[in-house]
Image (cartoon, rainbow, N blue to C red; front, side):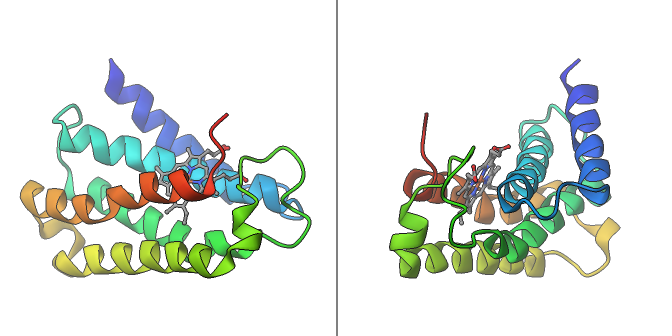
Length: 151
Ligand code: HEC
């Protein structure tokens, strides 16, 4: 029963980010991007564990979503947005060199992971996907440890 829930979550998030999320609210926007990352990770993790049947096109959406989040996320941390309903760590603004490095690593790893897969999206195997996903998954924990406040 887990699979339909995860897929439904992934699709509703895609629909949500396409509709008018309050774009003038950088906190909401960056959290919505991360929600899409979470949905992608749920789908990718389910495929890795064999809970969701492997489908190379669906699997590609996992990495493509993460790549798009990696590239856009950093645009939503203007001065002042450390205040409010956010879990962003103040270090983002005070230790910007390490923050930029964490963003750059996520961008590089997602790009490198996509580059390991054949160009034709439907043509790769579960093992190839596992290798690619494994290259990016660690970014989540590393960055959250440094730059997200845990409750
Ligand atoms: C470069 C740093 C960075 C990376 C890499 C990163 N995150 Fe995040 N993530 C954050 C920050 C910062 C927040 C808190 C944002 C806020 O509350 O303003 C966050 C918040 C979240 C949230 C909560 C969103 C919400 O609605 O409040 C989820 C879910 C999440 N991340 C999932 C992931 C997953 C899954 C990955 C890996 C695929 C990932 N993140 C990679 C920095 C990162």
